[in-house]
Amino acid sequence: MSKIRIGLIGCGGRSRSHQNSFLQMLDDVEIVAVADPIEERRVETAKKFGCTRLYKDHNEFYANESKDTVDALVIAIEPTAHIGVEEGAIEKGFHFIIEKPMTLDLDQADKLNAMIKEKGIITSVGFQDRYLDLMEIVKEELPKHKTGGLVYGAWVGGIPGVWWWQKKSTCGGQLVEQNIHLADGLRWLYGEPISVYATSSKGMVKAGVDASPEYDTDDHSTAVFRFENNVTATLVSGCYSRGIRPRCGLYITLDDMVLDYRLRNNLIISTPDGVKDIPRGVDQTLILDQVFVEAVRTGDASKIRSDYDDALKSLKMCFAAEQSIATGQVVYFK
Image (cartoon, rainbow, N blue to C red; front, top):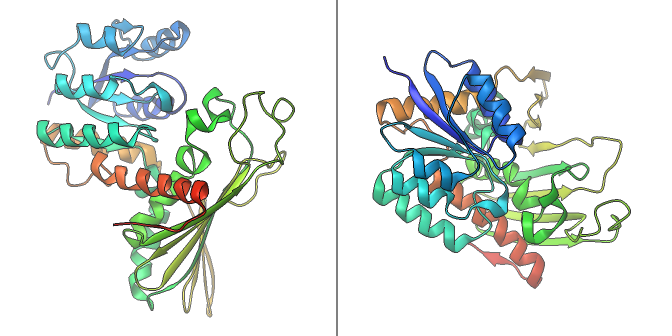
């Protein structure tokens, strides 16, 4: 059986998690080409896989590669770098994994989504939590209980070191750039939201003191999402916490059970009969990558849990919360 030939567009941060997956899948995949503007990163990545085709950017990559040499891509780049990257992949006919947020331009995303469907491109977006055994347990448990209830979600910590995180114009805000994982988790568990109302606050983090001089994003925000079946989810995001790591994840209160999903670590299930603590048992990125590779091999993408079309709904969900912050109004989803 021939190996799936993969190219990497971006060799930093999240790309390294996918690289770790592929190192465990060398019987099934081959990294044949890499592109990154930072020479040290592309050289390091190429050496890791014995790859000899290295490029400075996606334009150089596309000028030299085709469906005769590459089957699929992993696109893991900065939020503002999505300029011609996906368009080029689609035109070349490359299937691809793309990391979130896929873009900060919703008009571009809609156009790309239409192009993907027209060309029959297989896509997978990096919403890794959907592949967690812990989230699968939550999803299986919910239908066994009375519908409705409260959900509290949180992603609170410090400011990541990457440059784009400092400005809202280059990251979209914490909910869009980071906490979109839990927002997507809410969609996966409860379906499409009905409405959102959100607020935010600034002033705790001092630009040029606690962060870069360019820092202008929200220190924290709160978004209240309403779903069908009397479910209300409050999702908080915060980047002002230093030196400690507050609890992050989803806390779901049912009529006779509490599901306490602690982000990518463990799940605590509390009932009148006692408490059960379940540790994470899988590498969710590895599973995501394995599912994608199998989809490319067979042409059957049914096991991919978030393709571009689905992930776009999560992106729009987060931007709707940002719209509510900006206007002070409830935003209703059509």
